[in-house]
Image 1 (spheres, rainbow, N blue to C red):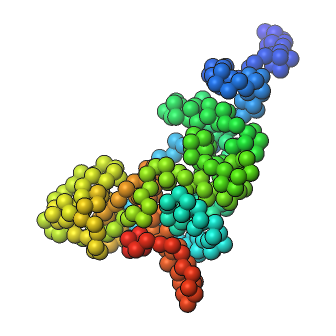
Image 2 (cartoon, rainbow, N blue to C red; image 1 turned 120 degrees about the horizontal axis):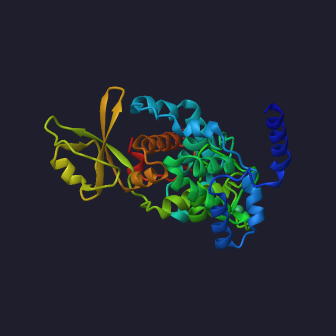
Image 3 (cartoon, protein in one colour; image 1 turned 30 degrees about the vertical axis):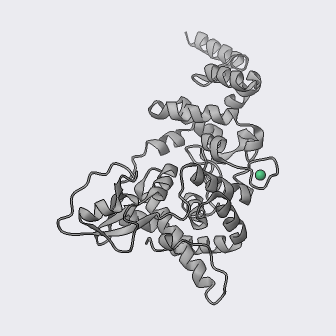
Length: 342
Ligand SMILES: [Ca+2]
């Protein structure tokens, strides 16, 4: 019996390299689909996928329950002096590029800076996981989100090399497979990334014009309103009508919200469509009119706290740039409404 087991093990060891034992579940079907869509060589696709590994650390990361932090705690993660100051420095270093790209796409430059500040601390933390491992693990070994991540894996395999920051097998990113300074998923690279420096490649890791242009184009394609407001504080009166708000979609004119008891703390266009968001601040609930551009930020990450952190970081960066330029004539482009949204 013992002898036979050893023999069987030895046979397995010799046989293993000759078989397809390393295939991931669903790999053959995936390779067939990608090869059909793109004409890519199935053998090369299989080699790529066989080099990818299911990573337990990725499954652990995505399964970790999200902490339900109140806004007052969440805000402190992103609105730190270090992140604000680095954003001001980034803005000044890339001011000409930022403002020309923002103008071209009709968006506000400080929001581009704030997105990459919140996502990766201005490129310092773009992620250490292999993107292929991340998407193989979540697309093929994580049933709760398999439909989404398998599609992202397929898209990654279908992207032309000219839209990747390097060889596909070597790309790194977040545990969810997001890449570059703006943390784009493969479908966002395909649909929204741009070759802003016109070198024939899209490189969201190394080309500052491509990084900035791609975030700007993402905002523009998701409906950013040029010069439009983002968010403004409200002061509800004691009899304010309770509202059920499920997301950041603007659904009531400002004047309707005012009639229901939500007074704005600054002048707002009475006809502008707004949502009314409640956040748990350090001194109790905060009420916010939020507008279309706020909703656009939530397409990047659906969390209302995320969008508010981006909004407030953007404002803090503008304030810092203006202070550092005080006395000089050149000031960053801002919009009076946006500038008064804190
Ligand atoms: Ca480029």
